[in-house]
Length: 310
Image (cartoon, rainbow, N blue to C red; front, side, top):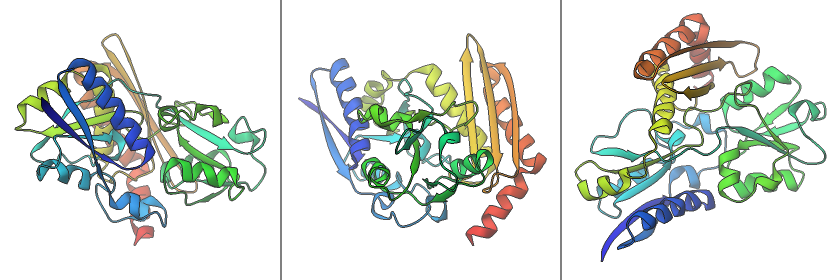
């Protein structure tokens, strides 16, 4: 029997994502044995501070990709938003399956149903510059604190009272069966999320034609177009995966609409640009929006961020 090995991080969320791909592959190729290979990454081991302070590229992905190169695995499953925008030579994204929710959510104690319901000076956990800037824009009084670790650890800090609330991706909670703990779903257009949030990227070696053909059958073209277009804006900003950039996109018929926001960390400066084009012109729209954001002051926001990081 042919065997396909899937490299995955060891967190419950990563395992849930990889098991989803495993199940899908088993459905389309019942004669193939699919097994998981667990990989420990630096991003899982180092949870000490805000994620954006890391100097590493591919904080959660490079060691999983290494398993493809050294032959331990044939397929790697990533949260698409975690992948560096620079392509890894020798690997291809064979599939971007249908997307989960793109939204961020609020998980809070007590009867909280919106960011506006949080008490004055509430402590909100997040390690995302984008989320910090957007929270501060809406509620300058909120105190944002580092929140790392797996989903269960982050949720536990809310439940134990160490923090008042946390902002998380709805997709992750849905995949873990934790939708019931969501206090509020944040509107993705008003609170735009990370490029490609909610999408998975399934990688294989470029020369592995068998795995490439099999995995490619899971690809969802609208999801791939939307996620790749969002990431093109990020790549054109030349700021890395942790910049305070939020994206909202929608595909209707043969048209894609894209809105992008960059804000500084205290939420006082917020720059937004958007547009709609035919699908074949999506890459050009992404480049145009990035240039507009940078020329409108986004370049100064990124420069301040780089100086603060130093």
